[in-house]
Amino acid sequence: MKKVLFLFLMIANSITAQSVDSLFTTANELYKNGSFEAAIEKYKKIESEKAISPELYLNLGNAYYKINKVGPTIYYYEKALKIDPLNTDVKNNLVFAKRLALDNIEEIPKTFFTQFNENYFQKLSYDTWAVIVVVFSFLASVLFLLFYFAHTPIKKRFYFTTSSISFIVLIFTLFITYSQYNQTKNKKEAIVFAEKTAVRNAPTLNSDEVFTIHEGTKVIVLDAIDNWKKIKLIDGKLGWIIADEIKLLNEI
Image 1 (tube, rainbow, N blue to C red):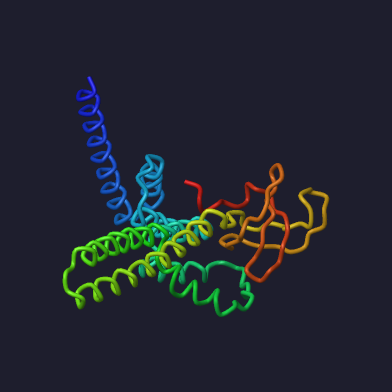
Image 2: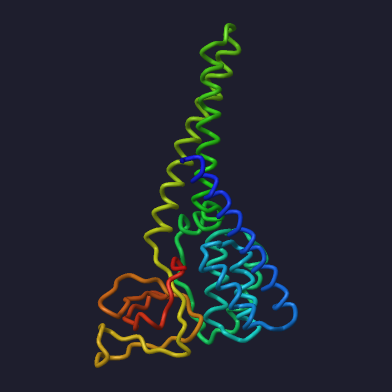
């Protein structure tokens, strides 16, 4: 019975994969023919199947860019970078997309450690760092075994030194992986989808308006009350915005 169930699941997954591939091909053809809205529908159907990838989000961003939808364009480029931070095509397209956004917000100067973290450690996702951890744990184990079974002092010294270095690197990369994972899960970023929206000093409609932001602006979500989100801009400004006017980047 278990074998039959396993076979059934394999067949179902194969059919689903073929369906997704067919949808992706159809969507790409629609895009090439200039039917951008029809292509978006197909891409969104793939997204609803949880068959996400940097290529899917890149194509969605490109399609929205073609119909001048600033918010969705930046949103999907940002989601592509969440999966593949080193994707140069997405980075380049995001630069052009941000030029369409009306808000020009100057970022607060970052500390040396923050800049170093973003320029080096955050270039890789925590999944990639996890793979590096596994590699160094395997390497450290093998080198320690070679040290244990080595007979000559020179070999023992060599394997002990290299296994020690591998273990130190393992601890270091494990710390980076844990840090990147926590930062990814705890830092809630969102893109403004409303063409123009008021940010208030309290989560009520009759509270004072502190500033205005426009479609495509990236914000950090700090808190939530009812249908309101407390947000922070890269220049340090804080306020409350209606939840429906932004879309979280960790949502599908």
